[in-house]
Image 1 (cartoon, rainbow, N blue to C red):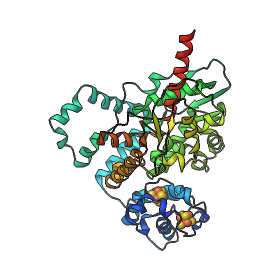
Image 2: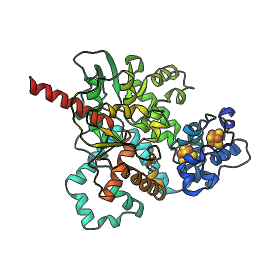
Image 3: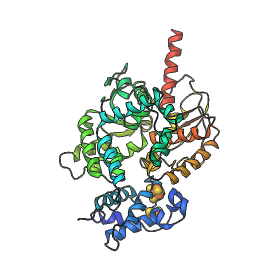
Image 4: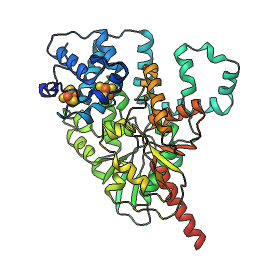
Length: 437
Ligand code: SF4
Ligand code: SF4
């Protein structure tokens, strides 16, 4: 069987010059101070496998799954090592070799990665089930009767962290095409999977701020997953299939920009050009797709968004950076620029804003102990900002912080996406104008 790490361009594997500048920013290295738990050690292992000096073993697989994939190492690296490609290829190789054998793991991977997250309608049905379980009181009853103790231990521990699914999904809040009073641009909005289930109001706010800036907004009602979950978990073939589906649904040639509001999805969506480079039918369109893909804050700054005049927020705000937004997409100043433009917002930085919160895709499920420690560290740093509102631009981080707050009964009033606060300010502006009229 051909080794995927071997098939990488050798220059990618050779880029690392072992300087160690990535070590202080690596959360897993900070946890253990062991070389193999840091980027330099992991890259050395990958290179030894590509050179045929080491076999793919269970130990190597565990190491690849202990890595958060947070990409903090790529921001610190002076040599420009493409760790994202190395990491995804290494995980894909681990899965192809089946070195982690477990019936339970295979079942969960198949049902979640292969079935649930490739069928958006089925995912919404599962979301509706979660919603019913909560609103009919079944969740409270199950807890009161301690029936959760009948669940396997891991599921029991995860139950309190289940996303609070809303009564409506994005397509029930957003029309497929919405037109502004004066159209200057045409854009498409990606609604995501977790965002659609847990935070559809963020998708609504994204559309609202685009309309307020003269964009005609297209939002297909049923969108496939972007494939980020699949690529990060060693299933590159499914990731390619989903990328093709999304390109067919949202042809890049029809739009000025394709907008993502989820840091983790955006980081993957930006690299469709690389993912589909060997597919003659899609390679050129994937290049155009990647060129037009923008995070919402990045796009707003790029088009010099209109600054709202009404004061809709009166609290101190702090900002937690999603790893894949700041390290994966290098979008760091723009969400802060959006926040600073909102009248009434006092943006107060927290320490280690760009340190991973432990969510990292499904890391809080696969590595609960380390994820819990990272969550504690994050919550302690956020608390140091003494802010009333915590903002972040990725649903995984959003849930992780919400769960951290719930656990501590904090005094923070809200966790919000920056565009939700901006949309609130535009709405207040409209209401004030209506009151004056
Ligand atoms: S991706 Fe994150 S956890 Fe993994 S090696 Fe890089 S900094 Fe460390
Ligand atoms: S900073 Fe870059 S070049 Fe230096 S050890 Fe880390 S990955 Fe290698």
